[in-house]
Length: 470
Image (cartoon, rainbow, N blue to C red; front, side):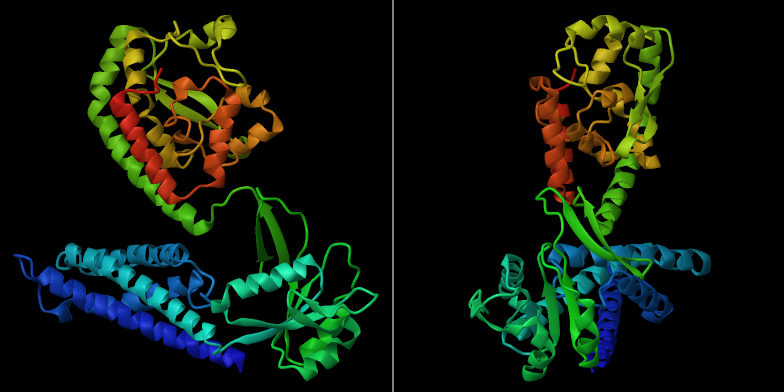
């Protein structure tokens, strides 16, 4: 019955999505047709609907929006819709290029994509909110009992209580421990002992059983799975393993077969990383265009100022110890690396990083390049290749990483960036490497696209004011 309801809901969702796409098509047509150069009759463009509806619905399905969306936030829904619409749009654009590139209006198609994405986001959010409202009124709820009477079980019940829009209701608890039977836990009755689980499920309208046990409790849960399966009751297992506020947990199926519990120290997910990568590509293309415009003047200045190559490349460390060649405009004399050993005693930073004010290795034109951050423009090539990001942590050298403490290494667990928290936090005022690492770890633990945008805006301001450079 539940599977049939799910299929019906999915079909209704596809129907609603198709209606949103069709409405977006006519909305985009009306807007574009009001421009000075009107469009051909709408029937000439309507063939794109035959491609857009199945393609976008396929991507929406792949992004999990035809499953349960009750626990998805507005941001989750938005990123999943964008992750469906824009890749699908590239496929549709390819169809247009091969079959109708001379007559099909690109402005109309762009409006169609943007309006479709907006309508789909509004539809999904409205459906989630409507279903949440219905569940809060006690309609379409699922009853569950919790196996366990310890703190973890009480916390699970509290989580259910705090999210009534999920449509779950706890009937009570079942005790696993020996000894006197508890009367209640978290204000709900203890319905009995684990040995009577089958009879308890027959006595109450139970839809789901959640095993919520402590690591110290020894229970062969497999013994109870088959009777519950025969009763048609869904069984869930709440895992109780390593706990840490810094570690993010994720449960998935490895190759749709083996249940896997994953601990990772970064809060990024695939949808967020996809949007971050799109932003990196756009920023890299803009940066490389600026580089092409300024290159003749910069190259001439470097060559006149000192002999040697225009570009400087150095091995740097990116995610989890991978090496890459980081590019810059040369701002130092060609023997800078050899002279660094002589200057180590004048290092102004405490820890595994070298920094020196009025570094004698820097050429006169190099000081100007560094002051304006123009020396880092070639790194947009690293960004376009995917070795760096616009925003991230400063890429260290292998020698610096060799002197890292263990907790320092988490700063290289993500892709390095052209700019980051350190660069916009007054880096000239920071003389302790540990403080640099703390800023990087704050970025990793609190990352969002909006944080990246704020750092980019602050970077423009810092460069404009000529702060924090050396």
